[in-house]
Image 1 (tube, rainbow, N blue to C red):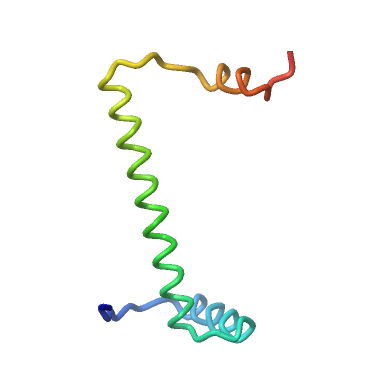
Image 2: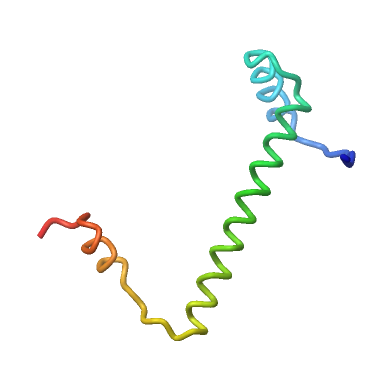
Length: 78
């Protein structure tokens, strides 16, 4: 099942969208659906990460500095 929406986008974005659709041999609706789906997934992942971080803070887990993470992963020169 799908739901229809009406949106307005700036002309500049529509021009880019038209060009991309032509180059990819897809229609604009397909690209818009893919963009929305991908963005929603990113937002969901971001929200899950935030929830995990808040839970870790509530559980009083020890904080680790960014420098410690880099050092533990071998990303810093000693």
